[in-house]
Image (cartoon, one colour):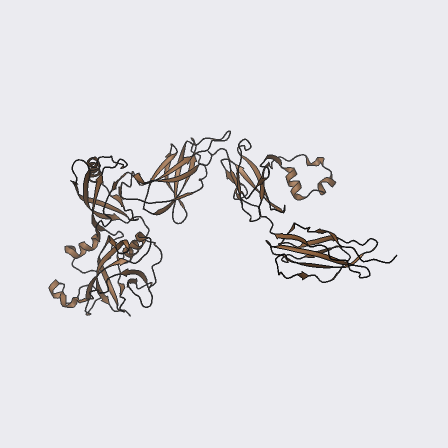
Length: 601
């Protein structure tokens, strides 16, 4: 009987509608159909299914085996491919090509537990298990086991043990406590039901994730349960604009059997460096009110629970909120109680008080001064009380004004926080308090007072790097000569220039030469400047930058640069600032005088 050619290959794997993992090597198999003969070679064609795609081939591969391995990277995850096969028998007779089999290349779903975050982390409340979402996940499953129970594995034969994989052995050695069942979808978390965890024990949680092609990956985590601690609370944050407060709502979960309940809570605030500062302890009732420190400031809080014997749980998941003030507030820093003040946004001028004392009658030695570590500014404030049931001090303007007078001029007088709706915070002493009715009846009371700043706002002097001026600036700049960086200011181009102080010295009785050490016999010039801070956002920080530069604790000469090419080395004094309505909205206008002290270069 003559030797006939092989029939069409069949049983292709991957089959039509199948899938492979693109990140690993893949062995394609089929059935060689030639009864009574053997295969001598195979030839595979493959390519993407899109129209016009290049069809690649293996060429004739000499092999008696009905399989071929493609190395990882041959196929790209997320793409659809097709393949077909033909083969030769022992006398090189070819079979026809098989039908095309269409398959997809996929990535293995990756299951990575993210909470508990590390093996043997200690928890004190029912956990919500979490895992990272794989972009190919279509379903997942969690299992809780007790790894401390080891069944009598000696009852198994060595053959049974040797036949098991490590995962099977590990699973065999754990006692299954709870199984979530397979959950369809791309979820990444599940709450542990009650009734499965006891105190002071170690458990193992395992997650398994599958893709659409039933490829899967698993991860597990061991964790400790310490029921001697109260359960970790949760917190949400909201804003009470009527009281200039951030309100934290604290929820303490129901304790597990044998676990102590929360007797109180602690509130922590996160600092800019990521550390936590205890803001309040002994908080009861499930609510805490924190005064907004500065309008527009983003603040992050976390809470913990404390048992009756003082044991503290872990911190809750942080909650972040950005709170804004709609009006001015005067706040007692010790009690966080305060008053809402309705005011014109252009509320007045704050001038360097220390400089004014030096210039006006305290010390006529002009003006290179070594400052104390605090900078002092003075100003005035005008506001009003209207009928407002939401105001913390009562609906009656008369009562509100009288309460404010007691607040400001009480027997235990102290500095207060003055907070603007634009992000500024000043700690001030107040004087010359006045109340004036404005409308008939008890409908409005105008109040005013003078104030002097007694401390910086609490914003650190480490306020970031100053700006680098361009080679040819289009505006005015004040620059630190040691760093070459400074602050940009906008001003009218008809700046008044400099006057010869040498000529004016006789009128001012300062002596023949300008009396600041280091001036020598050089002629000194003086001038003044008024302009606007050039910044689109975060005006409070921009204001603090120029305050820190012009009025630093240790004064030094600065470079004053104009858009017309001049540069002067100057001492600055009489620095002041205002909140004013300009062409760009509410801006900070700054003013200062200066005297030339030397040449540039």
